Length: 453
Image (tube, rainbow, N blue to C red):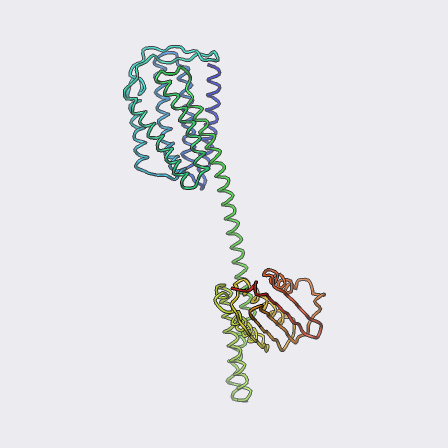
């Protein structure tokens, strides 16, 4: 029996390896129960194949009965674990039905252990030698079939119906590839089991083939589970990377908000507090200067209020979508003029509905342009005008500042590039004109097909 032992030994080795591998995978956090029951089923197949080798090596009735009872018992245990694996793999979990199927296997297992010759046979008179096609011989019993064998047939039939029903429901749910893979492996296994039942009934004189059905089931499902595991690991890594990038974005947004608060609102409020503290003393000495200070104080507080509203819009982007562009620009210019003590004239004509994308680009370009004016232009007068009609919308921003050479912008000053990229993103036209000592003018325009909401 060298060939049979060798082949069965290979099957046992593969089953042992796969079982230990999936038990190790089960120690992780990705579907641990699924891999645990599959790994346990694979180890049970390993024990089944070893018991089957012992059965084929038996040369007397007592050894054959002991080995046969062990093979049958291990097969029932495999049926129990496979039912739980199936329920987890297909996510079809009728607990009462599963417990009922387990009960049939447990009853069959008890009958097999209590009966002197096992559940299959009520009496074994002798062992007869059967010659196999490749020259080896095995022993098969001359025996009487046990009527209690029907419990085993009932358990196998019920389990088969449940397994294929679960595959069908999984297929209907949309998991077609997983259902087909499981159905194929089960079909091969069930075919091998039916062949072995014919051997038990004496209809066929041949070796058992169920171990090859087990092997196909283990290999096919192990490859499928490994593929799903790799995909799950990749997805988990992508989620972790997305979470890391989200945290970085949140941190950058917080830093940006803190910088804006420091550069604008906090400085304005500091000026307001200083002015308010000095006002009583100034009023006593010179009421006219104090009156002028009160007007500046009112302007500063209005600017601080507008700045706060702008920051709230930054924190809640839906605020940009809820308000017309003209109102947003007026609020923005009011906040910057209050903060920088800069006179800004704002004109809005034809404030028509716009898409959120177009509205955001016009708002950001205005914001970037005004910030650049405050930082670099040394201007005293700024004009912001928005004109819209049925054909196009035009934004014009100009100042009387020191101007600059557009062809000689220092490295690190990316404001112009950012505004141009924003305009290109919506297909708008961006034009900038400036020269030293002559101020700067920016024109941003969009056609009707690009701005209609």
